[in-house]
Amino acid sequence: KKFLKNQGLIKDHKYMTDLLAICTGIGATEKETLPNGNVKKIITKGDDCEECVHDLQRYLRKDDDERSMHRMLGSWRILQNKLLPLVTTYHTSDPKLIFSVTKVLVMLTMPPEENGPAVAQEMRYLVRYKEAFLSNDILAIFVAMLEEPLSHNGFDRTDDDNMLIELVLTLFRNLLHVPNPAYSSVSGGEHLTHLQEDFIVLLKEEFVLDTVLLLAQLVEDEANRDWNLLLLELFYLLFRGQSPEMVANEDG
Image (cartoon, rainbow, N blue to C red; front, side, top):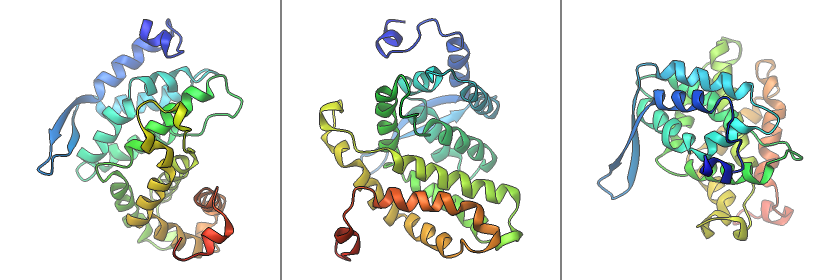
């Protein structure tokens, strides 16, 4: 309780016990040391894992005005310790589960309201979320998830195809929206002050930018028009803070 109070959360939040049970039910996470020395988190999903992920969606939708549940999950590092390990462990064997996990990832990474009561605290969690997407080939997995739905032309796509494309693009949008923190506000990481630049470089390396450009070229197709504002926002966030000269310079 003292930890929760220090995090600015509501000590006796009525949903805390439920959220703890849900997060525990998702599965057990372990660390695995790879041959190159890097450490990867793997998870063994619980018997009710998918139901717990759906419960997370429901609880996040009914969060209070202070977004207490969002902040609670941030303080418990659920995205880093449970959700992303689910993606890396089960993205090929259980795509239905990963579809549901992606919905939760989008909800957790949504930009906070500018005048919300705990914006500074939420932004700290969002910075750490964004940092987590720079490791363990996470972005490559989400790009691979787009291959099948994007291979279908226009109205040949199913509703699930379109939903998955929109979810993944929205996830990228949310992460790009997170600005670099000031060094004075970052606990233990000067590298986070150029997090946006590192993230954009990885988007390029994982062909995310190529995918966004392709969709932008096809946005006039009637089947793709629902994404035009989302794509516009993606481009804005990619260029945010850059001078016209830097954008125009092919070596920049």
